[in-house]
Length: 416
Image (cartoon, rainbow, N blue to C red; front, side):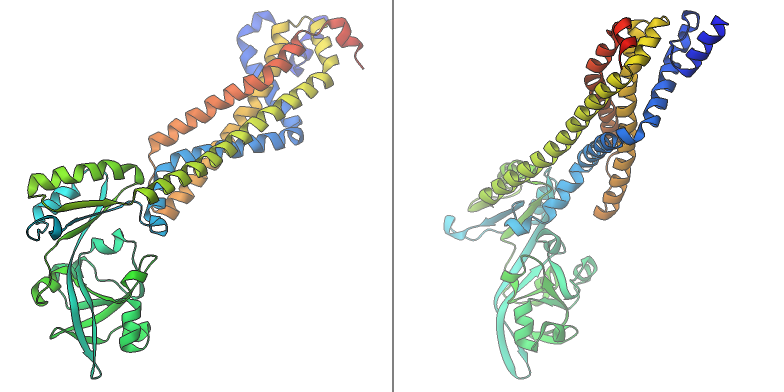
């Protein structure tokens, strides 16, 4: 009869397993811990949500950090184009005007950290006649990288593409104010034919974007078209280089003079970097990152304190249960491991939920940004999240577990 009672108590989780079945202890601890957490799910739900959200935020931010940073760099023109480097030859520093050669441009494109390189040819004082009126403006022949480097977009129509440049098509893109001056409105310019320097060009688009304001009185042609059809157009004396991120700006700016010198003369070369806007961007991003990670850390720490409070309350509420188990032969270590496993069950369950939420967040942001984050980094973040869950569970549950294990049997049985 006594043996059946002991078996019943052990099966119900009120007693540790018999020493003869020691190998089942780990499985029994897991089962009992999950059962207790499930029974008290309303008490744990706030804490678990906090830890899950913190874990999801950590995984998403770290895994997508590279793509978020790259996407942020795409819009740095709002802050002055901090990742754009200008290189040009100043004739006042040399006895004649120097031009960038094709092999130099190709070499610059291979510098680590360089995203785009664009070259242009300028024709000052170009004219066009429309409805018996003559209009003057600056004309620029540009390549396909020009639009992406400065984050230009079509306000109306389209911007000419690589095919237009390769085939030397007679198409033109106008600045907003120039189109308004000639045709009355930017929309009316699309599809019109303009005579520029005795050549006819079809207007296919109006330039738009954050930095389009200073180009509003200019016209743009494919660089190949301008080179073959526009008289007195300059050679390539200026280059604009856009870096992948602001971290690459310093290294690219340092490498440029050596690369140029290795391919042609560097007499009169000037390399211009917006160091002050760059510092402002880096400072702002540092504070934003600090705020995000501090918020995630605070969420996780608060979750740990929540577990500590709940486990302390659980120890007080289950004092008689602890006394009964000890009276029936449970050792201090059995009580300690039971409560510690309950805390670990909460943190690991929360971490797994956070991992799933983080994965969903990564997939959503990947589609939104059009990128593919490295799976290895996600797995590393997953391992870090689970490791932190273990540390959090042990840190928050250890003291309540020790307190429960050290209860005296007589005091626990008399507790009301």
